[in-house]
Image 1 (cartoon, helix red, strand yellow):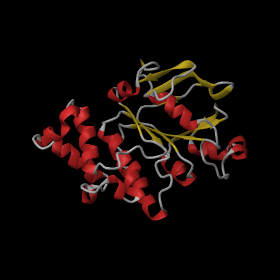
Image 2: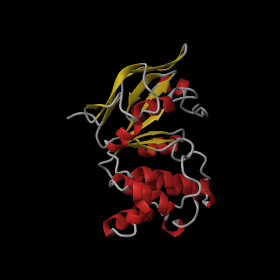
Image 3: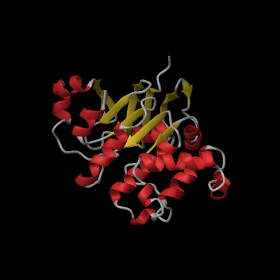
Image 4: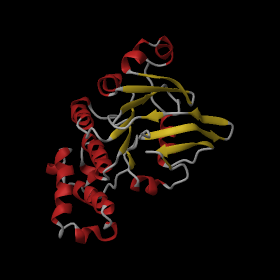
Length: 251
């Protein structure tokens, strides 16, 4: 059975700087897989390579056994690969209802006239309502995104990715910048993702990483430095020396 997501010798050069160097990563189906590492380790660069935002200098990417190395980002989404961003990429003037409505309609092939279709198809409306309810956004569904608290905006971005019905979901620091009182809602929403959705996530909050991840990969200077279960990573003296227990923010 192929892995949900796999890279082989994945590299990316920016001039003379190697942001990713010969990364071979295998993410099992249904995994809860964390990607951690110190400042400038190349974590977001790797996510950008996986999603097609960046093209690799070398290496390959397989999604459920299919080579997607040269596919455009929207083609990857269509094949079941979705992501969130370290900084929200939402339409500020849209409401949560419009945001999720557009995503669901696009997935069903009605993106061009979603505002007409959304009011006339019961199944589509139920799908939209289900996503809004799951992420506790129903009460704010008519509010412009720009007026929502930051925690709700982060929830909406995760909801937007989930509305695409991904088989593989990439989360780039889902709780970053969220006030402590709102973090529980974010963490609960991530923990409640369907078991058949494979999750690869970047996170600096070690409490989240060790409570949620079943496998952890450590990236240092663009290379895969260590990998194992949370217990194995916690005991690894090399990982402790370069990262664990230190404050870090990915570039």
